[in-house]
Length: 372
Image (tube, rainbow, N blue to C red):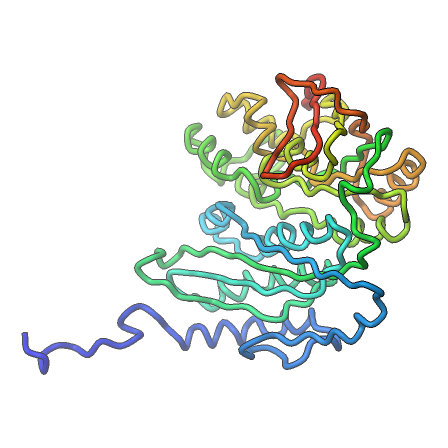
């Protein structure tokens, strides 16, 4: 075929619809603007988001905190259910609540969506969810990008990621340096699976042959609805705890990939060990369902899923009652998980140390889990 007989190759014929991208921006603009305070300059659609840092002058030694993450394979459930306005909460939770762990107040966030084909309504739904979660956490959504990747992703496939920046006074940073023997470990309840371990969960569901439309009596709803339950956002309650509990709050740990023990160990100093009582709470039904359906060993489940504990606080004994009461008032159930003591070199099953490249303390998981 001669050059004159061939159809011209255009960006559209290669699978990229720039007009659809523009329509998606129009559909999401109001939701994004709702997260903007006077600190955000330039509106929506610029090459870069601008944030006025004049308020930083009130800090004596301001430190910026930053974090980035994605939603993982939970997006596959959203795509299968054709429900796209909830995973934004998962994205914000995974990113912003990692910043809160050091005591930082989130300032702004950007997002990135890669998709095989831009469907404006779908992209706008994703961004609306991100914006709603940003508004709930007091974070400005100052920018983002939607990229169309035909040939790399199927038309209905997408992935989301984000990054956020926060600020904290240097002397107020939470972490291992504050933790002492005798401190109390408090659990904050998760809303469900949150956004980790979905490769395991999806495999279990596949092996069991269950559909996402299946009604599950112990869950009180369809399986897909349970699997899409948004991540609980701990931002405001934890920041309030850091402000009001003062020196009683020593550390926070966001329970994400790796489970409770691995993430708690990251915020303990070398030489200290946290004893965690597995029987101090009842494991929510969705986790027991995953275990039963896949015959998943408790050790594997414990190292993968949050099992009902989404955030952990390490506080002084004097601050326990006040922290529990304050979290309850904020709508976050909490309870005593265990205590911190000197590390005597314990080894064996249930002892976790040296996780995620951090040379820190250790966690010993004791007893057995209670299930509903």
